[in-house]
Image 1: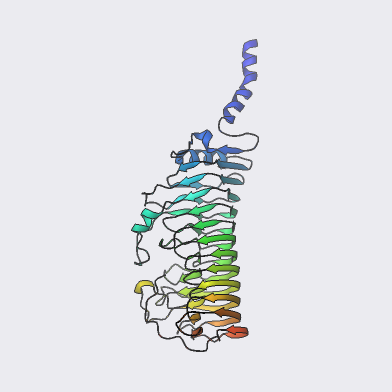
Image 2: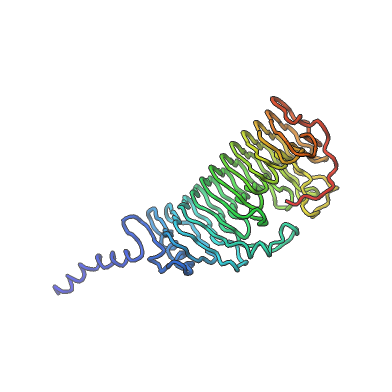
Length: 406
């Protein structure tokens, strides 16, 4: 009987030893290497197993991807979790260069109080995908996997990570609320199609801060059905600029209200700060309370633009005006150099003219050979104050004759 009693007394210690094989019980750290992950090998299952245990923890937990290079197939990490959870990535997670199927390298869903952090890299190895990407040519096209997707993530922060060479959008946010992106680095070649840095949809209270983005498409695109979006201290370029839209393409879209872009710098982009909507819109709704302030332009084409005739590759009927109603817009203290003579272009809808547009303290220069710096306007009567270089709305916009390509 004494031996049985001694064995029973050892059971708690044995259980603790087993637990420590997969998790540091004192710190709540779930290291993927203790779940079988090894450098230069596929860690998809190890990451899923570590996440499952961490997500079930009743106390705050952390999943660790240590330094090293690991291969990752499509990973879908789901909540809800029982307590706040962090995914700390210090290594590099690489997609297969030939895998052009699926939603994304990492898809995170239905998590509250998530932190995604670390000095690590999500490497989409996108070259094979870019060669198959025709979404910039067709209205309906095959969707390639993204690097990071955040679906229904709330009260969370993503910080310090790098997204490299995604096959499609780098970061896509769907139905996020109270979500912050801080100090990210997002990089893809200038020629890579549809590699938007961060795309937002159906989200509220999203903050994009202190981030450097260089891609082949919009650095940031704020899509439809968004409210209270703040973009601050972002460096963008190369790429297609910082955009609200495109709006009006799909019947399911809803209003965009409250977007602030401030203290940003754009370098060599094909557009600066812009709002874009489709002619012959599939739906009608307001887009309002949108503000661009304290923006520096360095050799940027089309630094300031409202384009309600956005029709890339003639994918629409340009003769039918956009039914997106743009109002309460301001462009203030925007300065620097334009690579095109038309530095300010405000082309609003004939059927739904822009209202309450304010232009203040614009100081842009153009040193090219295509004529003096100018602005063009249609279907808008802005309120103008402060410095005006170029003179704002001094001439009407000519009819669009060439299709947009971005």
